[in-house]
Length: 153
Image (tube, rainbow, N blue to C red):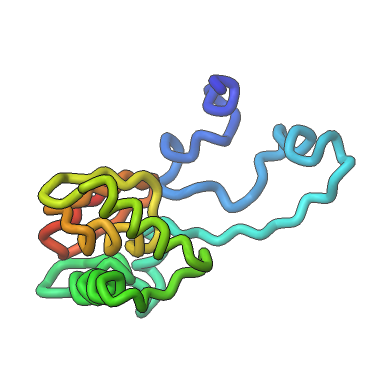
């Protein structure tokens, strides 16, 4: 919706600041609470890379390169091995098993795959395990990885 990103709304954070606003813009309070019918509960967690690196231990340096925590080559390669052996943990119950089977059925081997929206590279691990040569991840948060077969945009 154009009105969500209209000039002066305070909702198009990418133009005003490098990470999303942590407070509800006052002019939108009514819209977000259905004119006060529902209480507003602030439950904001900033997962933008700039904020993560600011906290000690959240970002890592690998071979003189800042890497987003969880996106290190060693971890992604570990996820690939877990997927191949059927021992990958996922918060989505058996979705990883079904998705891996679907990726093999779709014959992604020796192909490049686009993954849209990813805060953790578990799907990227499944795609690589299914034989894809490269995964490009499209994500609103900034992700930096040192894995040669994963690119984040």
